[in-house]
Image (cartoon, rainbow, N blue to C red; front, top):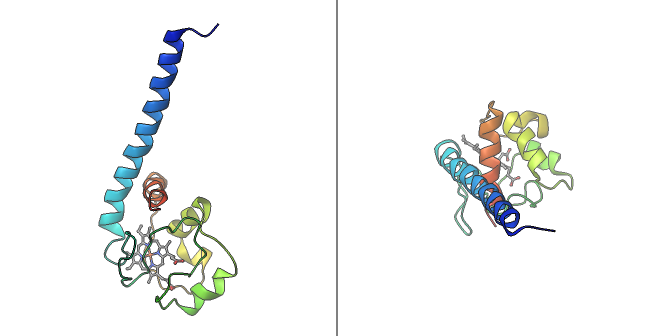
Length: 125
Ligand code: HEC
């Protein structure tokens, strides 16, 4: 038999997990603002900067933002690949391992920070 108190406890847990996700994304937004926004925009329809607009990046093919002039290295690496969380993690760790010769001169060595940034990127849909 499922007790009401158990159900309530479970709902509280689920909601706490959802809040934790929100908090992670909020921290990621701060990191992205401080570390990526000099070169990237994040909201729908915003212009490309030194780097392409990142709205909807998860699920988008590599090097596919209209109007952005990607480097030859980036275009060569694209080859039908789509950005997912694993590839983004590899990219932020060492962009050259994903696309040799690409033009992004930034990396994030701290895994916890990468995960927060990726949690934020996941909200951009
Ligand atoms: C100094 C400028 C600069 C900073 C800082 C920077 N980027 Fe970039 N980024 C670029 C450039 C330039 C490109 C395009 C690279 C190319 O064409 O070779 C790029 C490309 C990307 C791409 C691939 C986009 C696509 O359409 O395939 C992603 C994802 C990305 N950056 C995420 C980030 C994130 C997240 C941060 C912050 C943690 C960040 N970048 C910080 C300049 C920057």
